[in-house]
Image (cartoon, rainbow, N blue to C red; front, side, top):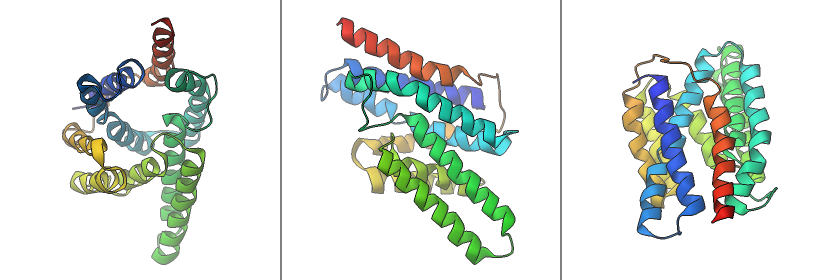
Length: 223
């Protein structure tokens, strides 16, 4: 399974989740099923983010794209989930992805710069992750500090999918619990990843995310 196919799984399950969150009565059987399906999306996006970091030609441009779409997506996100133009109690997923990418970028730089000093390397890497996780919690980004920790975990265990599964289990079972535990099933498509890119859809998700949220917000207003 290549990156293109994984992205489609993540996009479809995310859309199902958001449709339920915005348009389906909370607590209904349909709502629970759709939200459960939606739990698969985030870990797959995290995996793809780490793969993107490992293969990108410019981390700075990658960070800039995430930051730009975090800002672009905030109004659609708030309209869809809160019915307001701006709502500062919860920020969209691009903020979490940005902070997580920045975290693994700093960890990577520390690994290279302090390869012979594991103690200092571990201290500075841990400090960077701690600060950015705290920032995610402070900003109340989607998946908050737990999302950042999952991104870091997937990066640290990037060569071992079993340990990726352990990191995922820790985050979703210990730190989240409840329905988020269904996210463990996302390790199945991730395990079939073959390292190939597949068809290019570089900007599709960036555009799809705010666009589908605007559409859901419009539908919600109309009905």
